[in-house]
Image (cartoon, rainbow over all chains, first blue to last red):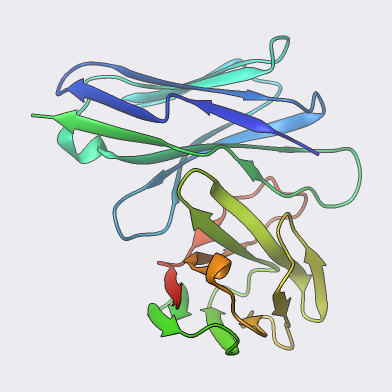
Amino acid sequence: GENVEQHPSTLSVQEGDSAVIKCTYSDSASNYFPWYKQELGKGPQLIIDIRSNVGEKKDQRIAVTLNKTAKHFSLHITETQPEDSAVYFCAAVGGNSGYSTLTFGKGTMLLVSP
Amino acid sequence: DAGITQSPRYKITETGRQVTLMCHQTWSHSYMFWYRQDLGHGLRLIYYSAAADITDKGEVPDGYVVSRSKTENFPLTLESATRSQTSVYFCASSPRSRGTGELFFGEGSRLTVL
């Protein structure tokens, strides 16, 4: 099955700095890579996703890049703000038949200090 | 309110007792999921359901039972709770097939098994 590794496990930045979270996956058939943000006491929420036919996707201050050859993808947050503090999960899904479920990374706790 | 709701939000039980966590969604999404979240493990899939009366095992199904007699409900039962089942449980739903749709998570049920 799919295996997703996520780094770092914790990340502390100053407000205004950029933050980068990296994930690698094992299944070359995986074709969909979402990122979820989990605020304290809440369930995860989708913030951005990318499909395997795209190398980069941006949405305001967040962007995701995908390198299919190396089987890794990254989340970039620019101009970080205290409200960006949360746990971020990457995930991968793919497979060539039937229903394929998401495999999540173990999460990155991002702390943005004012 | 529309959305996905879990109950109870907090539960303390004793080893060997049966516990049922409830999940209800108002979107008529086809797919529903149960995840557990543990420090150091991220989100791990317990069971999922593609439609009423169709369920399948995820990564960590042992010790859990699910049912889905109606599209909107997906209860998770721990038949004989163990301390290792102390965790935060998240229910989620999705309208899309093949795992490439957004997951909508509930706010979680924190279970402590003494």
